[in-house]
Figure (cartoon, rainbow, N blue to C red):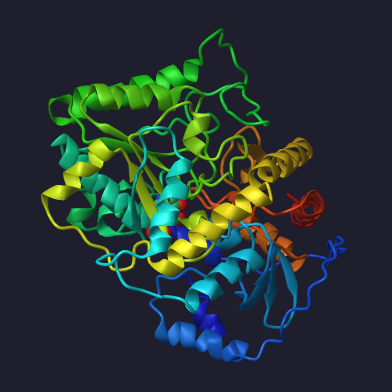
Length: 499
Ligand SMILES: Cc1ncc(COP(=O)(O)O)c(C=O)c1O
């Protein structure tokens, strides 16, 4: 009964409803695909009962929190790419705590670094010097291109983007900020305005202050797009008549220019934000060349270009350490969070010394940013990415995954698009390849839920919740991927027979 009430759709957003509105179906049991074996004995769960947790969650936590699945999972232990629920069941984690567990759950090296720091020094704030933040600032900025060497540590992606907005406005003296439709940049009052999904926006005046959203350059669903637009091993099935230059990139760029002509006061701008690949929006990649043109236009009109690397940083896209490198640009400001701390609250804003100087005109303070524990974790995460060559793994395993998914797309009418780079992957589920209309929420939920029952946890995203988001810890293997492909294949086949 409690669970029933807890699962009732929230009236506040379409997105919530998609997560919860699962029609009961009478599908036949499927044969379990074989899960890769692991040598790990998870500790036995000894916390409150499942029913108590559900009740506490309903009675004591705010109603905005999202729970995945008809019967939400109670996860109590994680080891690398694996999660264990209260009953001891093991799941392959293809969503990594929403693209956050970059190097693996409870990675031994990261755990060890944190434990060592716990016994050394927890916290001072930055009024005193402590070694870790300095060591970490050096190591992190060594990963950035020349010029981008000045870092401010904060605790979350929203905070990082808030600070980047503040810097852009202070430095340029302009107020207006541009972002792309379908973007997600956070949930603080400032960044909620940047986020361009109506589902994630509350109706408050402050949310829209000084922000304009421009047309999303989406080569699959957008007006323009073809078979060569994306920097991905998998292209859309659209045809393409471009010669040397991507026409889609040019057309979307013209739309951006119109914002300068028609909307921005005297055509001036403080900055433009873009994710290198849209995450929450459903792994949308932009036509090659668009971001570079956009950055040039913004700078020519007084603004700064801000790359939101919250999901795409730290090697996830495989070819480069940062997603903006795939676009061949050097941003003015880079924001990062999530994978930077493998699950520890840590985020950062990196910019040039010249730009950062604008912060000196008042006091600016963050109690926890770059605290000794966070910095110790950040250092260990960088070590692990390097020592275990996780960026290379993201490229190799991600490409294998993308190619396997493309085969599934060719076999299943309801897979409209497969896209992404490295281990930043999206699978768009549609009613038919012709219409590209989103697959109904209950149908997506059924497929997603069956995958979970077979042992694979995918994420979901896109404005209609019909994109499976695949962004696992970067230690995932080809065997894991083979298993995940098999599970997805079976789930679609089982749940789509009579369509
Ligand atoms: C691209 C992007 N930017 C910013 C954020 C906000 O990060 P946080 O939830 O840590 O505030 C997110 C969160 O999902 C994100 O995906």
